[in-house]
Length: 369
Image (tube, rainbow, N blue to C red):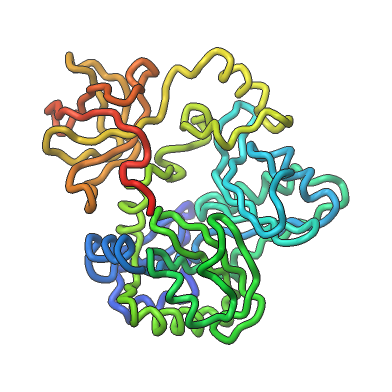
């Protein structure tokens, strides 16, 4: 083992997933369940009923104090000043060049109190960025990732699962809202109507010491609606059908929110890191744009495949691609020169030396339920 070899961590419930028959693979520095049965079976369970993911590799921070909002405003692209207590906001951290350090969720959980969820591969990078940008006093930052588990109960029947374990009116919670509630016999569990599937549902944050009990009770409650445990394989196809970006693939430190179609979370009513660069980009226009495309001819696009015009000239590159279980065709995302970004534009995916016809379409590929 070399000194530079990556150390792969285990999520707290790894043994539970192995017992369920999960295939475990390294992902973002953690051993994670990629599938339990088949990707398609798990995908359709989420679309039609319910599925539960263990995504405890994700990072969680808390930021509290009179200067907490000031810090968030200074380093994120969205405007957190309009976020009421009990609501959640999708936003991004940007570097001085306007590139995306990470995309993240900001939960306003109390007076001068925020809960922040970041991508697993970026925990240390994001933590360093927050600490670097803290005010001298008035903002207390804590990284609670190692002590927190996250379960995503997703699908149109997800509310039926949680309703069996809490008296809180979860079915009436608005999209992108959050609340602390008693769940599965445990007090002050943070539950949010967020997710990465477009199928509706909840994300449940629990401390490691009660994680196994909560997971078990959720799975038992899910039996009535046919809920299945779901791995990273289906998580990827589910998020792709919605056109949701995956950090490291579709967005990176080298891509800006405007290039990635995230202008809607980029608010110039305030100044934030890199906002001057992004202001110029908005004024002058972007040279490239992240687009979604569907295959017209048979073929499955994959990351790093070239995107080309009819003459075979390279016009971009696929960042994510798959065979959509719901649409029965290949779909993908990728950056193309701006003139090729309009919906309806014909382009070609270079698949093993053959140009396979595709067409730019608007996100999402599949309508939300």
